[in-house]
Amino acid sequence: MEMMVKKYQQKFRKVRDEMDRWEQLQSRFINQFRNASSIIQRLPMLGDSKNYGELAGVHGLKEVLLGKQMESLGSIFCSMRETLKEFHIIVMSLEKIVRDGNQLLKGGSMQPTTHQMQLRVGIRPSVEDCLDGLKSLHEMHHSEYLVKSSAFEALTLNSSASDLGALHQILVDQPNIPKEEVQFIFNIIFAEEIC
Amino acid sequence: MQSPPHLSSQEKEKEREKEKEKEKEAKLLNPNPNPNRSPSSSYSPSSSATRLWKPAAQRNLRNQWSKYLSQKDRWISASSNGRSHATSLVNAYLSQRYVPEMELGVLSEMPGIRHKACEKLALQQEQYQSKLLSCYRDMVDVVCHMKNVSTSMRCFLKGSADSPLVQFGNHPEDSNDSGDGGGIPVFSILSIPSFENLGQELLQMFVLELCLKRLLVVELLSISCKESPKGQTSRLSWSDELYLGEFDDLSSINLYSDKQCQPVAPRIIGWEFGCPTSGRTDHVPDREILQVYLTAWLVEVNIDWQRVDQIFALVGEEMHINLS
Image (cartoon, rainbow over all chains, first blue to last red; front, side, top):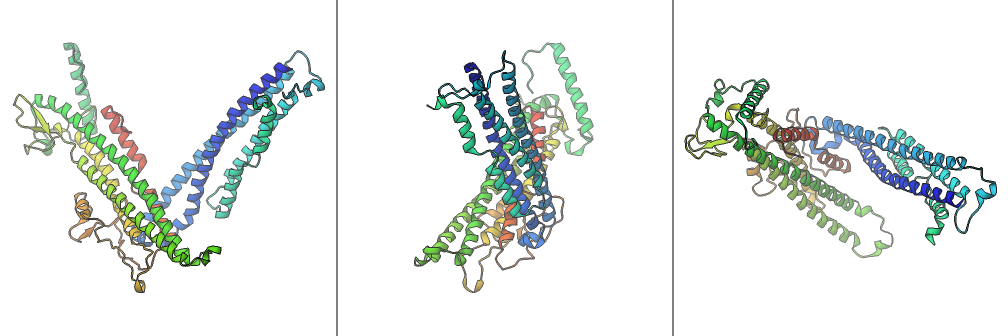
């Protein structure tokens, strides 16, 4: 069982790499969202001729300005979609890690007993701790991915300033990935390294 | 031309054939390259002069286009600095306007706090205004340099073609010398006029954008926190010179109209001139208007950056150097 736990710890290191990558994507996604939402909030203002002040005399400015802003918004939407795809890749890779983890157990010569599953040697985690940890980390990221996708779907030209603010808050908070819980899982798995 | 130093006669023959093919291609691209027919290039230099002209012209073009590129980069940084100064300027101005209604809580008991805050914000605003102006000066300077580059692409024979030492320069000494090598391709396909057209296309975008930016600068320099008596504002007008020598600079890039004694009105590529100075109002612009100004600065409506990159990529590929 000890060897087994070592192998699981290896898997957790992989998860950690994936989560670092997730963090990078997260800040990219937030940036993209902010850019998109500032354009969306500007659009009604840009659409109203009386807001042009001295620029009102420049023929075509309003049309070209609006056109260019729509163009940038379109390209931001495209890159957001790309970022979402990359989030999904991470979710799939976490899913694979969970699957491999289960395989590891079934592939062994004998089925461990419940006692063996829950056996903790010193401060080392039990096999069950490992399996549960991998599973929850995957579930957290999977749900968060769904939140992000629906937030992206909700982002439209007609979103109001308060909608945009709320969506932004949700994206920043990542409610499905509570930091303390994640830390707690890693603390159990790598208890010996912390000491 | 970077021909390898030791070529056998056979290889030389091949080279020459290649050259001929390229010239044919160029003729397809450029409908009027024939030096004998085109009046502008009736001057047909001796073959040895042409042979020597090419490397000189290539060197010159590479230099000029590298300058173009560095001016483009200067524009990008001046424009982005200008934008951040303009944003800070607008913020300082708006905060100052809101100072009288601001809830100050315990601070409200401090004597003269609103007055001091206003003075400080006004000072900041002046600083940002002078920074914005200096960014604008940089942009004018950039466009003037671009203009110079766009007119320095030709390569003229210096002195006599028969002299043992053939030299080239940027100015024609012989009125028959068009400096374009009779319209032959300088590298592989493009002739001097083609390079000039691409350069003009770039220049045009930046000239028009500069003019629009000037309008924004005039407006942003006009907003002032300082309350003048009886609401009189010391607004700048379009015909005011923003810094000493500005009109000379603008004349050199055809943005100054001697007839109207003021700079040419801004316009958008593909659109007619408007009448930007006719609708002048004396009231201070509100929040929305200022934000539209900032957006207009940011978006650079007259510059098609995709096309700009495309032109540099095209030219760079032709000259076998990296222009990005």
